[in-house]
Length: 508
Image 1: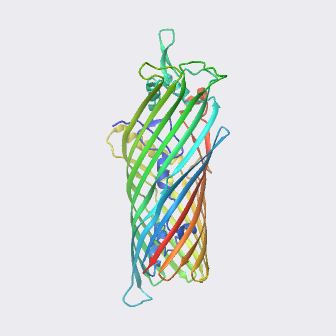
Image 2: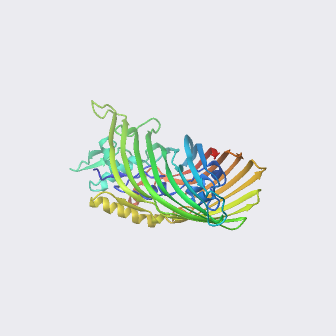
Image 3: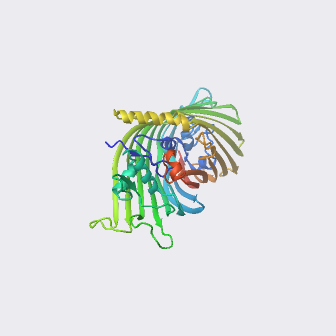
């Protein structure tokens, strides 16, 4: 197996370091939950730790199943629109991506004694279904014109100063003639990109992602005296994530003149990652009604134990002003595709608590608090190779240096307009998982919706807007190169995800 892996991070389009292990962006991707649920839970900010009685609540607190008074089947299709606005060196670029996804589908069975009871075991419940808990669909583009920073210069520096311990992409750059060995006239040689001081390039970086994670829920619960509700679930988690990062560089002509016709005309770097995994987690919780108008709930989410497999690779395609050889002409390519890496990923555990107020049959107000320490995540390798074991351990240790605990808040409200119509609103805040970037990756969501309920069926509609800012570099090198190459330019991206969901449910 090829033990060299170029990491493709969630916001790092690609890095110039080569590892055979993961980084903190992989952990965040599979640990930060974006609950979808039903249209009702979405519209109320998913603040359902103390409410229950909705299939979307079971992913938050499985004790919510014991609030049901009848059996139910629900189905929620959804539309997700991702939009990004990126800024690099004063240049702004917009992108968007549309996707369709099943937010949830599920059945809840409610079983009562043959005669109604008010004390002891009032009812027992069982459910099976699927809930989407993350959406990875994303697209962004960043571009800069006439910049004096070039990735080709990194290839040049890396090959001349690393004692033949080149990075993976530097080797591909050499194989595609972006850099070549040149006689120094003194019996030695050096590697050159044939760029002269002051030469400029046009840069474009496109990042395209797609995928999901979701849970197959097996949940059970009991209602004791209509005061205490208990529930627990076993969840089989499936995920798929694909990412392609395309970086383009074009030599910028100075008054129509090229200083060296051995320099590239333009080239592109493609990095791809195709990851899939299956995991399992456990959840348990309670809801108590100390007063008729008050609900208090709490739940524990165990770590998710994943088995992961990734296929990854990189490639460079070049086009030159001059012919490289008689066969290939002025175009070149070098690819390193279809590398496979298997490992285990353990996400952090999570604690959830909430309270809600039920104001007669007029309104419901709810709020949730959620705590998760991302630094507690772990990577483990399936390999017996010492290099793999050491790199995985280093990546796990690095989580403690880069990540921290986050406090998440959710709030929701529902007003009932008569017996059949309800209006809903919600808010959610996810704290930053990073130690250094205090505001980076904070996710703020606003939601609204309405519902129609009849005796045997109901229809709910919801809209949610989630927004966050992120920073990344189109390339990244060791800080020891900063003096010669400069600090890599940073792209600032504003991301907005629009969720539209429609739930159809039947009671029986």
